[in-house]
Length: 391
Image (cartoon, rainbow, N blue to C red; front, side, top):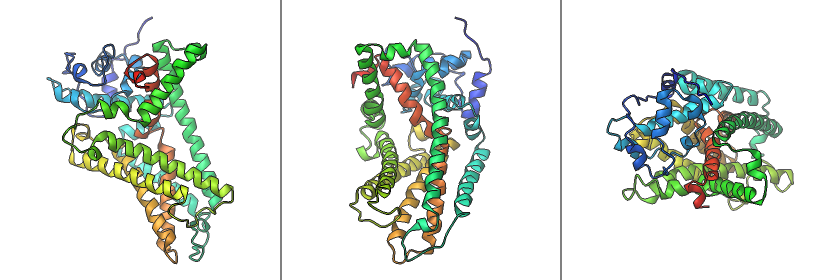
């Protein structure tokens, strides 16, 4: 089978970050020191070589691209200062932009000013749209949903999530086709027979339960900051707090909505802290803010190798997450104050607008790696790699 060479691949990739791998002569130090590389998974060296020779399709179909957590050990050991760790980060941005057929991701990644402007415009759109149907600021009812109607928020959220799912599924399908074709994985090989189903189930559990949620390899193998840092300061823990915090807030929102549908509680009314949805949301919100703040501190101070180079997309995601988490707690405070302060309603409007934007942009920003990484880890586990052995 012939391979298509893209002579402008490296030039195109440089739009997604400052990289210079022209000095790399494939010595293999990066692969030798990487704690996540298997004997037959020669990344990052192999990924770099694919970019150097212009094999774009092979690069985009490489599941190994997503198994890297950018600990920085490869960059520290590179005798040519080619910074392979940052190259892998750039390659993942490039992959996200290519999986997205709308071209929106490319704009957000390659045009920082335009990306920031787009983010502001989207937030303003949601705010103005919500405010256009606003009601009175009823300080006696303690319910923000008299200001912005609950049905409007509900159905707008449904529409946003539908768009997010459509865009995310389209990107994932593009990725799956590429990886499956390279690895010769077919639907028949996944579900035909008891052995195939068992192997597929084990790979799913390994990718989602063991690695994506449990952070097993990140926690066990990526020990670039041990034993210097305490456990609560390590990158794997900070990363886990953001993941679990976001998922917890999503679950709390769904639970609160479900309870209101059942008539158990009215949406937006104050409830005790021990109430299931409130307790889950509080713990998850604190976890999210904890992780995001540490990520921002690390990037602002260039604390470690992984945080030494920051891209606009990194800050866009962190800022949106921080705003969503902090404004959520501010709303909690305002909701319990007698009477509800006028500023609480405007914070509520701001919170809803940014939360909607965060969900809408998920398939197009760095947040998309929460979609693509589990898929790559599934194929990685399916091939019998190290992750599967932990399942």
